[in-house]
Structures are given as C-alpha cells and as structure tokens.
Image (cartoon, rainbow over all chains, first blue to last red; front, side, top):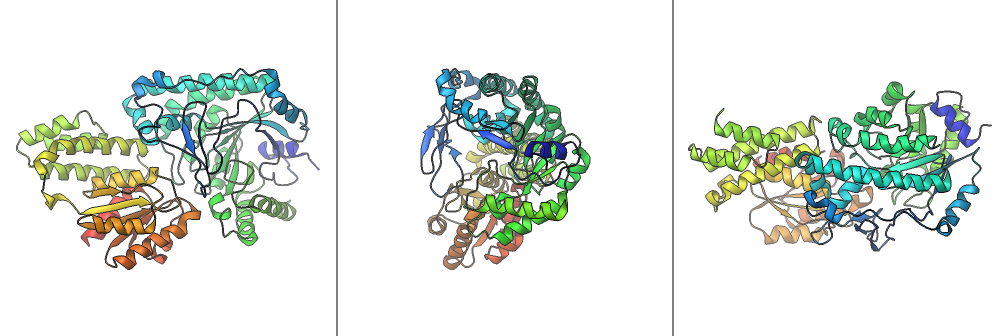
Length: 326
Length: 209
C-alpha cells in the first residue's frame, strides 16, 4: 500500500494510485505558528494585524471584514501608503517552539508538512478597501493597485522566508477566492495583469526553497483562470466546484495541474445533512472525475465541517468508492 | 456620433469622469432629461446582458453603474418630482442570518440602473422588516430578497411568505447562489434571476407585465 504522500504523487503524475486521495489526508497543516493570521472567534470581533476589523457573528459559517466608513482601512486608494502597514514577522525562536515540534512530529514520507496562508492577495486587497472599491480601482487607479499588490507580495515573500527557515515545509496551502459560484470576479485578462506575476513570484520562491507542492484554494468557478494557475506554479487547485466542468478540465489540463474538490460543501454540510446525501455526492464526484489528476474533497478550505460528522462521513464514503473503483 | 449616443457609449465603457460633461452637452444640444436617462438605462441593459453572458465581469459592471450614477446626478435637478421616469420603488435586502452583501449590492445597482428607486435594507434583514419597509415607502412595486447560504434558505422562504401574506399582490424576486428557479417557485416568489444582469431584466418584466 502506498503512503498518503506516494499515493498523491501517483494521482498527480497520472500514474498508479492504489486508492483515492482522501480529501486533506496527505497534508499536515501547521496552524500554530506565530505568524499565522488572527481570526475572530465565533461571536466575536478582532482587529487583525493589518488593522482590518473582522467579525464572526453567531450562526454564521465564517468571518467577514467590516467595511463601514469607520472601519474601512484604505479610505482612498491614492493614499494607501498612509493606511497600510505590514505587520512584523520577526518573532523569537521560543515563539516557534510549538510549530517546530508539530512539524518534527510529522512522518514526511507519509504526509507533507504544509504551511497555511490566508487571505491571499486578491482577498487581502478587498479586505483592506471593500470589494466594490477594489474592483473599480483596478480600472480607475491601476498603478496604485499594482503598487499595493507589490507591497503585499513583498510581505508574502518575507512570510514565506519565515516559514521556510523555521519549518522547512513540503507544501504550502494558500487561500484566495477568485470567483463566485458561476464566474471569476475579474476577467482572465485583468487577472493575468494583476495577479499572475504576483503569485508567480511568491510560488516560485517557495519552490526555489525546497517546497514541493503548491496547493491553492478557491472554492468557486475559476475554469477560465486555470492557464494562469498553471503559469503561477499551482500544483493542486483545491475547492474546484462542480459549476466548473471538472472532467473537461482534467482532460485539458490534468497533466499540468490536479483538481481537488467536486463535493460542494453547501450541498453536504448544512443543518439537514444525512449520510445518504453525502454518499450520493461522493459517488457522483468519484465516478464523474475518475482516479487521476483528481482528489475528491469538500470544497471548503480546511479539513473541518460546519455541522459535526460531515467531514468524516465524506472520508468514509471515499473509502467505499476506493474499494469499488480500485 | 450624436451626444446622446456618446453618453450611451461612455456609460457602457464606464467612463465616469466623462459622462457628466457629455450629459450636459446632450442637454445643451436640446435632448430632454428623460431621453438622456433612457439612453443610459439602455446602456446598462446592454451591460447587464453582457454580464449575464459572461462577456464582462464585475469590475466592468461596477464602473458602468458608477458612470451612469454620475450622469444621473446632472439630470436629477432637472427631473425632480418627475415620477414618470421611475418604474417604482424596489425594496432589497439579504435575508435574516445572512451577512453577504456583495451580490445583493450588484443586484441593487443593476435594478436601480433599470429605472427603479431603491431602498436597500442591508444584510441580516428579518422578514417583518421587509414588510415594514413596504408599508413605510411610497410606490413600492417590487421586493428583492437575497440569500447566499444553504443554511439561510429557510429565512428566504420565510421572508417571501411573510411579504406575500401581508401584501399578496406585491411582486417578489429572489436570488443567491443556492437558489434555483424551482426553489423560487416553491417558496412563492414571482421571479428568480441567476445574476445581477438578469435580475434587472426580470425586475422590469415583473412590474411592467
């Protein structure tokens, strides 16, 4: 039997996996580093390291940046330098002890030590200035937007260096939602101009420094951005929704990028979920997308569920499909 | 190209700095405010169609709507009290328990561009608040309810049904990622739209039918 890591490599190279990769199983996520971003607790509000106020109201499935007049960070894009100050990243070695111990405890022949980065560049920009203002500014103040993105890239490169120096990760799991369920937020041309070179710089840095795998999360439609994803150096697109034509994507791009998702979290992870509903979606996604260049997974961006039992039930159903199809 | 055609073209291209001047020039040329407004509404109709078909994306729609609103600012003083150009008032909001506002804001912008006066109740709006807003505002012709989460679909249903009990003739349109035409019909909504461009078309269709 292949290790989880070997099995993933076989899936990605179109070789001979001996079972489905079960969602996030090959990735040991390092979440307790001193440079991991602050998130509000459920029912709470925090001001994060960048001055963005984030609120997670009771009953919601995630946190939201607060963008009223008082809380918005960048009030005028032409003056972003006055408002945006990157947080410090230099922490004493003691602050890294927990994360280093966790990384050392991972059997790297079985799993990838995986660092986690969120939010990504696109989200970070609209966290700072609101979605509507950010999207208009790509047209109205392109030079300032390029400069702001360059500033965020510089921060991400320093963040990457800290991760690499302390944890020697095998993989990076990077979040940045680039679309809605039905389309990308911005055109492929605009994406290519603003984000492709920026991410290429970040992901190349990881790869040049020993990181084997780039996993990028965008639980959305983003089929039109796949050529850019490949150019950036993404190895696995996590969160691919079935509003993308996944079998077509696998056929066209599978030898260059692997697709992870297909099981739309909104359809299986909700108050009225049942094991039967989960089984139906897992079966469908495994049968439709096949054994190579594809990892069946919930689309949400962490190995957790909103309603207890869903994540584990998906795993059990993937096991059943592995028995059936391998 | 006539000034009115230029206004139309520049709204579509999202040139918000140029549109106010062109609107003024179109007025100076003798076009009526109503004609100019209609030209901009038509432009936004094209923008909405292009968005629905995937030809343009959110930024292009946003800058076009901004350009139109800059043009409308020039026309407003000339059209004050002239209700003949409005399709009526539309109440819009994201339903209780749901804090997503981007999709709702885009729909609001596009419905406004189609010629409605908008009352935006924001996010996390209880069913009764929609009803109260219908009561408190003049000439309400349409209520638009948005819900983005599968977990808030029951709240969407409650909103539609509460509005319909209070105002059986009121037109209600729904939308949001998990909403389907079947679900919209099942909860008693009069209309459904999959995106902001089609929402404007559907809104107009519902109140002019």
